[in-house]
Image 1 (cartoon, rainbow, N blue to C red):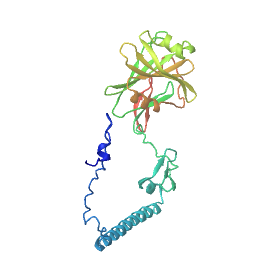
Image 2 (image 1 turned 30 degrees about the vertical axis):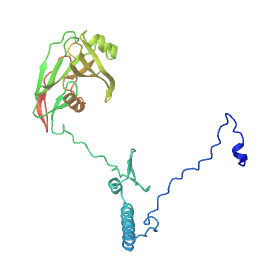
Image 3 (image 1 turned 180 degrees about the horizontal axis):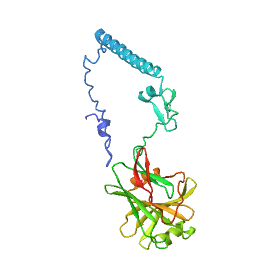
Image 4 (image 1 turned 180 degrees about the vertical axis):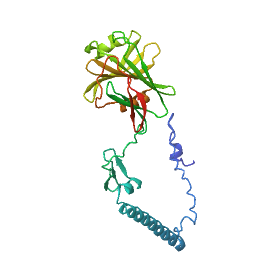
Length: 286
């Protein structure tokens, strides 16, 4: 009789899950390190180091020279003109002007205490005198001077007489009128009494010419917008009117107008009296 194997004879349980043995983990192989990467990095070569040192020294020298040059220029600024030309300077808006350098130095511009005289363009103009009303004025030497005797009509609508200076298209009229009402010489009076409905006064001013009141304004035509400059010089019972369309020409002749020492008594119908001046052309008084 054969011997019985106890292991083989042991019964196998039904529906029992067989035991699986653990699977060892798969290891990824490490690639070999190249021999070149294991060698230490080589240091900078001596020529490169020398070149870098030379470059640094050169840059430092250039920077020093630039700084020294700028400092030297700042130290050489001794006047307002030097400061104004120097780079980085600031000109302050003041009178007199002040220049400030970038390092804080201040220079004030010198201003002449004696103003430059303005040339008098009327110095060589002809002098025209009005003896009855004791005034004179100048006209350019190339201008045409005329005196017109006018008939008065109650001294309101027509002047006693009128003179004119004309040069090209520029003409200034000087006329004498009788004063009816002193209240005319106000802005309201000029608007209502001296101007018509088609005119309006602008730039109205009241000043004095010597001891006489003077009213200046511009007559503006409402339809054409054309302006005529006017000056009214008030006397005791009469007034002198200057008017013209050229503002510059008007201002020049008005600047020469002045009263002189009276040599004749004014009358309503003054007689013609020739007068002369060393620098004037003999004219007929009006």
